[in-house]
Amino acid sequence: DIQMTQSPSTLSASVGDRVTITCRASQSISSWLAWYQQKPGKAPKLLIYKASSLQSGVPSRFSGSGSGTEFTLTISSLQPDDFATYYCQQYNSYPYSFGQGTKLEIK
Amino acid sequence: QITLKESGPTLVKPTQTLTLTCTFSGFSLSTSGVGVGWIRQPPGKALEWLALIYWDDDKRYSPSLKSRLTITKDTSKNQLVLTMTNMDPVDTATYYCAHFNYDILTGPNYYYYYYMDVWGKGTTVTVSS
View 1: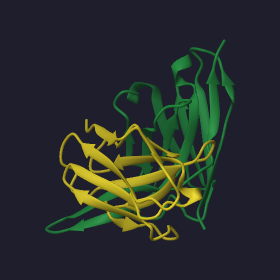
View 2: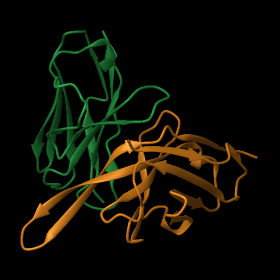
View 3: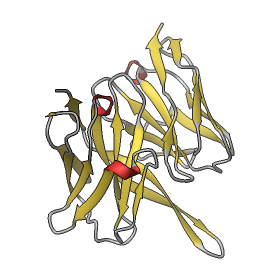
View 4: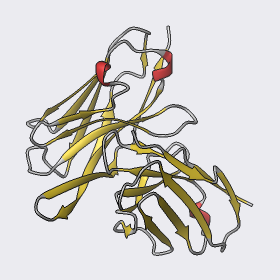
């Protein structure tokens, strides 16, 4: 099974900051990686698929990069609505697996 | 517009069988390429993929839960059903169903890679005596 590891687990930042979250896969997953945003009590929302493709309707301040085993999610200028938990997920092979999450908090 | 809604009991006793239903609209599970599946999230913990069923009735399960899970579809009702046997308090979680979209890798053959693009709001299940 492929293990997904995110860092950091918690990130404190301010509105307007540029932030980056890293996700590492235990083996190569090519570009078959998605990023989700989840707010408390809500379902996850797809942000990025295929490592760098922006889902329709998602603001362009979100971007993804990487391939193989190392990936990043970048938010170019944090907005108040962006404080949430972010998960990466590989869909290269079964069983699909998620990272443990990165909680983005207001500094 | 694709929507999904989960339903089922909020409380089950240990050893009982859980049955969850996902009712969806905006797509058909009889259309080639379509996939729908289940994911859960224990309180305060990460997401865990459980099962996936495709338009052609191909089914995939999490190996750690495979012996306890059954996923079925009813295309006439636009519904997906998940059963989980022998429930335990550690199975307490919010259960989500999701529509799976896909990327295609072309070459000598076509390979489809599925990701979750639309999620239901989830249903919370507590396992307790």
